[in-house]
Image 1 (tube, rainbow, N blue to C red):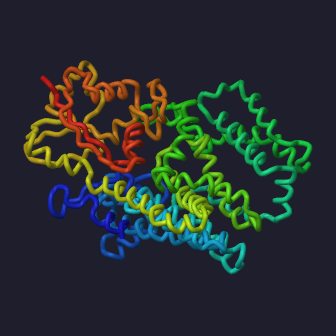
Image 2 (image 1 turned 90 degrees about the vertical axis):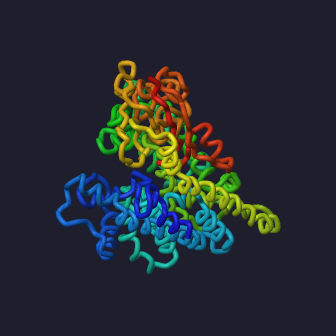
Image 3 (image 1 turned 90 degrees about the horizontal axis):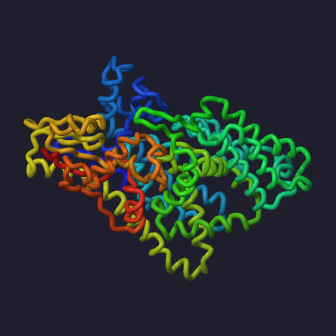
Length: 545
């Protein structure tokens, strides 16, 4: 119900009864791709358009290929309603899949599955992605449907028939190629014994991490071309005398395989990125700062996504997983999540928080495993409080969308009565007669703001200027303006000075903030800005003559 309610009301009525404003600018992307107005996966868009057509809300004939017409339809109220309901239902079913998955993996511990499903159902991060008409929540649904079918197939062979279509859906929904690693569970057990022969669990994990770090160095734009022999240091983690002879050539070739893979343009694009992009610097510009950013983003997402108490239980869940015996083939089906986690920890160049959403159900499962390692009496008594915390966090998280600063902006207009103003992307000001409004471009601030001085006000959205500060793309190290992502040094310097009141012709007049009461969101906003994408503070600056 929280997912469906938000999907039905967000964006409606801002400018009067019957009006609609897009809240999340990524909504409808798959629809646009289906109608050849955007380059993206079409899997979810095809289904949403089919449902909309069945409801007599399909696209007008002849708009395919016309980017403007396609955007108008896919971002329109009728299609967005269908896309959001599709996402909300898929998101609501994901905790059910997670619970069933836990039942299959831990049949003797049903409390773990129920707790994990409850944590995900109450996750404000997952709720907010579910009520948006994007592919993120449906993609996670199909990934976990695949994982559930794969685990079930290790016990009941009849489940094998579901694997091919679910594998296609898991990959196609968001080009999540990591789903292919599910096939590792089908390899013979004898081969697995050869792979792990001579290894302790911790040393094997250390060696894999060393190889991933080596690949992360090779894929970093700042890595000196002649320094690749240093990557042979990862060989020190391999117990050469104890491993199977057949595995020695594979471990020796690992760094060179990574170097060869980076010669493929698609792989280089998804691991290194470009130095320049549409908005200035590209994702590769961050250089070595990427290491700290990626290492911080994973725990930040898990803490905010599940709540601090649940996040603190995750390490105990990992320990419980590594200590348990019994068959491992079912757990091997979750290998895609491990590979994706390593990818996001080290080489990933694009690190928007929504990309981590697929890790959240698995983290909820580990948190539940860790929680039920407590003495049974304490666990039962503390369970209501353990679940009440993420419920409060979800209330705070989702409430930001229902108290969007762009709604409060509508109340500012009658008070200030502006005649000429500029606004940045994502502000979405109301269209009012007698008010001349223009999209702000940073070039207007050049030459002592000659163009900008022609207005009365400048409205800035945090979702646009946040690239000048610490956030999930820049990480915490933001002193070097050349290392910031999706901006330029001039743009970043301008936004920093404007918000600090250091530009003589711009006077900060009012801030319409996102307000929170839960410590996870308060602390994140203090150091990294507002967690939610496309909902953020709005700064109103008066342009002084």
